[in-house]
Length: 516
Image (cartoon, rainbow, N blue to C red; front, side, top):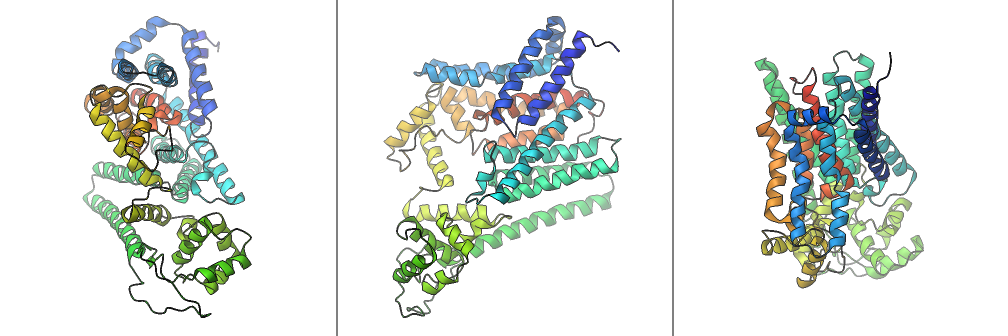
């Protein structure tokens, strides 16, 4: 069979897209390279008449490309044309990627399966390498094990890969039992990783998609008995999760030191009881502290200097284990505990490999510390709150057109200085909220268009909205409240390539009527 020019370019399009999707969780460089090659292939393919015809048939896809043009509103007020130019250049994929997808020959069902498999394989490889890094290195923060891309974006890739594994099992009618087991095994491994990495954003998005998936499955069940059983299981799962989170919360805040039982250590030293009544893991941090004994014992267990961060970390670490802060408590610690303190791990719960306890405990401590002394240093959550507050003040004063494309970070830095914020010394941070970022970039019109673009497929193209697209929507929508998700390369690719790809290709295949 002779290979035609059209076949060659379409084959390159399929291969390049698959390699691009596979590189999303692994390499920023590969993402940029394959995107550029896809653009070159699209231009070299020529055939503008057919491209134009497909654009007319899927003109809703131009709404995605038009978003880039709406972003240019931010040029009206910009004072930093260099930054504005860099932002427009890095976001250029938002313009041309949707056009390439809707004007090219649609992918067949088999090709879509290959594209999804490429993404699943890339994500699984990233997961395996990250776990290997965790097992062979001493990791103080689980976020460090995401060695390819940012841990939050990686967790979002993993959630999507889990969805695609389930989609493959449900959609591939001719799949053998062995392949089904492989897909389910990969989904299980990725699910374990989500809770292992304990990225709160990824866990929340995963739970939301799980609930939406079960609810959607319920609507397709015709047997009343099966529907009741499935509904009961879902309700039971949600109740169990609520009980677990409640138990963790109560266990953290419940004060077990309301009554002082002793004022002396076993060696005769005097305990001090601080006025700060901060409770962590059920015990007051500054209760039952004998610093002379701590210093003497620490000198025997470690070569690290006691004063400063080590002292504060040791007190919190002992407190988290329910121990008094004295000589005997330090001597009872294992060598691993000592290494944890040396690495400034302040709570034994932070070393737990699985569960929500670690993520919730860090958030609880940050919030408690803030309400006690308005401290936000060392807390990513409270620093985000500070950034959101400063961004909100800026947005209110510049609600119509924003502060200008390329000026949002410098204006935010100036606002933090104006507020005398404790994190004013940390510059070029950004809003960590995509809505506020777009508000500062292009004003209220840019936000309205962005929200319209996310919501339109559910209203204007409901037959094209599959469960994969719903999952992508949840991933983008939920993460954008706590991250500048589309300002990252991975987030841009999800928004500019994956969303149009799913919207304008999956529903055109023979199984499009199945809402998987």
